[in-house]
Length: 377
Length: 217
Image (cartoon, rainbow over all chains, first blue to last red; front, side, top):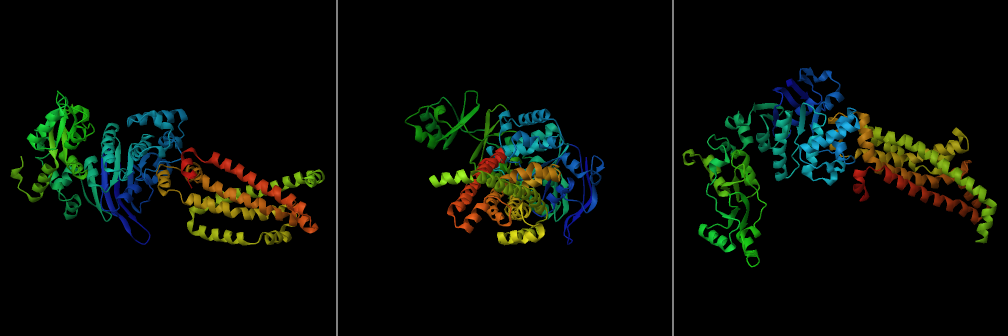
């Protein structure tokens, strides 16, 4: 699909931004370029749509040398998403999404239909079509930014740190959503990031760059298991060695299978008694079929003790859960980074099956750093 | 009041005619100014190195006394409306040029990159992105220019271009205050009315999505 052959970029004054890169990207593959800033990852990406011209070497898309193509047509045939989102503030969402189709002279009717269709893809209401970008949240704006790149249905999409400007929780959600979208649409993606978590989560293959050269190319698992050298190892970070351990693959394997829970129709005094018996300060609330409904903690009971009497009246239903078959490596950082004390683990039908606490994660991290694998189940 | 009525009876026709003259001298100058300054301003954003020099050059021209410029064109273009329009045109350039340049130059670089990366041609970027987004700033330049120009156009009477300046100069020569007022008051009213109309136009030309943002400036 995309072939990068002996490509170099030398700026005036002799600075080599990209040095003799070779890479073959297959159709439908998700490639992440990663490296410290100034390593040439963004430059490499921009060489592909000729925002920057190559000095030496050739790039082929579907066998065609991009040098032989009209540069405007080339860019219209490649989707492009940038970090600053770059939605045009004076155009409606519909106009923003259907910008490339407009450049390609699609009739208005068809453009409109396409915008609507794409908006449905990310579960946004068609009423957004007539709104302007500044009426949308950052996450919604970047969704539109991604849709805009998809509008003319290009087989290849370039993304320059598209989720970098978003807050961690929005970013997590958008990454999941985007990965699904990419797989269902079968697009080839070239993705630039400096966030290793993001690369590991999204990419089929990761290209690690340093000082204009490729240091290692491989699947996330390959790279985690066998970092090519000290640079890669350091870049991955020590804690990741744990995450690649084959016997610790899913959350289910490390969770505590006996979380302290209470059914929602119990009384508050029953809840207090249970907390005292189990020496905990919060309880997960389930219904009679063991489906997770929410949680209560000692402060909530304290505040509402006189007014309410049963658990379901005061429980907090907004809580973060993790599905039990999620890969551990996708979860650990999320939990640690967002500062949660514990996360309930559920199965596909939202039945409560376990709990992972911050303390138990810390143990795993310590063990992986200081060895002694035998102690871990 | 009575004096005002007699003045109107005696000079009413002339007043209307001079106002009309005044208006169209100003209008043609500003029209030519927009025609030249807006494209030039956009062109300059493509060559930032040259832009600074051209801007300061136009800035220097702006400091020349209006009367001197008018007089300067007499040997070249004679007297009458043409040299007046040419001189006023030069004056109209700077505010429009400066605002167009700044307006386009200060646009978010990310937006322009996005436009380029999506395959917009140079012309499409100007037409679909740069002009609409810079429109409020460009229009502000045109407004300033127009208001100044209506004032300066009174001096054009000095080289025989006509307009409301005729009344003012007559008044000065004959020590007749009512003539000076008959030139000054309509000029002021004209400037205010045109400024208001251009303000409305600016509002109409400002794209919907950026209206809130510009109102706060």
